Amino acid sequence: MNATAANTVDRIWLASYPAGVPADIDPEHFSSVKDIFVQSCEKYRDAPAFTCMNKTITYGELDEITLAFAAYLQGVLKLEKGDRVAVMMPNILQYPVAIFGILRAGLTVVNVNPLYTPRELEHQLHDSGAKAIVIVENFATTLEQVMAKTHIKQVITTQVGDLLGFPKSLLVNYVVKHKKKAVPAWNIPGSVTLKSALAQGRGTSYAKPHVTSNDTAFLQYTGGTTGVSKGAELTHRNIIANLEQLSAWMNGTLKELEEVVIQPLPLYHIFALSTCLTYLKHGCETVLVPNPRDMTAFIKEMSSRRWTVLTGVNTLFNSLLNHPEFTALDFSAVKLCIGGGMAVQRTVAEQWQQLVGKPLVEAYGLTETSPGVTANRLDLTEYSGSIGLPLPSTVVTIRDDNEAILEIGATGEICVVGPQVMRGYWQREDETAKVMTRDGAFKTGDIGIMDENGFVKIVDRKKDMILVSGFNVYPNEVEDVVAACPGVLEVCAVAAKDEKSGEIVRVVVVKKDPSLTKAQVLDYCKANLTGYKVPKIIEFWDDLPKTNVGKVLRRTVRDTAPPAPTHKPT
Image 1 (cartoon, rainbow, N blue to C red):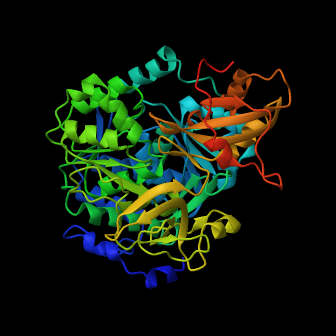
Image 2 (tube, helix red, strand yellow):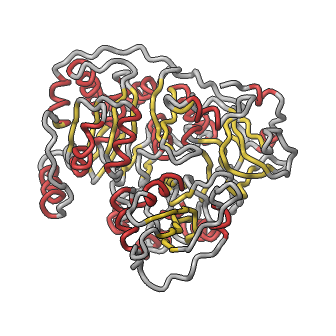
Image 3 (cartoon, rainbow, N blue to C red):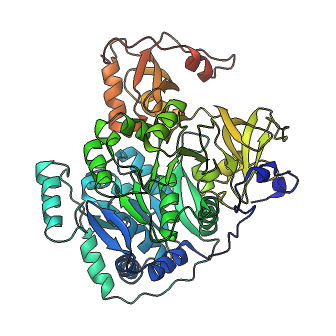
């Protein structure tokens, strides 16, 4: 990316940096994410790397398993450098095995939300051109419905308990399949199990691929500026830069072989993925939480160990604060609690600090920036209301609609230059051009201000994007689905404030069929949208406000308060 924009900016925020944090990092310190992983496995060989459901695998064991998987992908599937492999599962031990095996084979990881509907999955697999997929059996029925419309040639399946060791793996798999009925029937001819793949890989030679910093490590899908889901090309250099930036910012906070990290956020989300890689670089033990919605089991996991680090979003922190069993935990070992993905609310931050004794350190980033852009100081003593200071080697500017850089204290669009900014959207040069300024800065779509000390605060969003518990929902996508519902004439999707998730999806519909009900619209959305994208508020209007040329005025709809809820959609 052209970094001209960074050359003339006075980095006033450097004066506000904590002692010991450098102004810049070296994004070329490692040539690939694979190299960081291999170094950690060698350095921390006997230490615990990942724990899930009380089963721990060491760095050495992770090294051996991922090497076998990489050999299988190379030698058995004959995948070549740059080929894309999708991963579709929750936070279980197979996740790090899959992504690091893929990277070690010189391939590109395509992270997929396991809760995607067939429509959403088909688009991502087809668009990415993924040739293989690693999927937990619970969601194989979704893949079965769309596989013929994708480029997938090989399916590798796993069950939730497969890496938990005998006899626990048998018990967990039996409960998931037969007691919880969580594995719908599926039939994908030619699929192989991950166990079989690993066995074949152990008998296959591995060839260390030549991976450069400019090769694509992850295709991380996002809505960008429109409702069409696009793959942000995150190179090894992008990811390494952000790991180095986060490590520099933590400045010794993470002690090698001492930290126990609780990771409830799904690894397919860029915030969780990036922090997970950072923890791995420092020899931390990461405890994967498969289902943080099961708050009782989640808190039981936290109570069973002296954890030191927690990564989460505002909704998660709020839910924990309102659970009586959490308030009884021992927080004496806690060092760091990082909030990202969505704004941390003042009330939640203040209650957290009072209970836990450590602040919620809010950070800010986007999929397109790998993701970190700014972060608050770790020595924060009270809620700041800001998203912090630009990270090392990052230049943040506030710009007007003509892309001119504004003075300190002025309100405009937050724009970013740094080595963590994506190469571009996968095979969509036109969309990439829309989010880049003429002098090479990435336009975030967020409206903010920077104060005289370099702290940035978000005041609004330029995009119409809706942020539900840290996940992006794009109105265009919701509108496309609702518009296809029989009986709908027109639709407008907007954000509505919500105490629990920050925002929820609200849709306003103009009927074509007078007999159309809200329940019918809701059912159609549930069949075609992931849960967090499904509208929580559905309204029927006689018409939608529009401009003289017929464009729907989303802001007018958004600013028109919805009626107070009186009953469920009917």
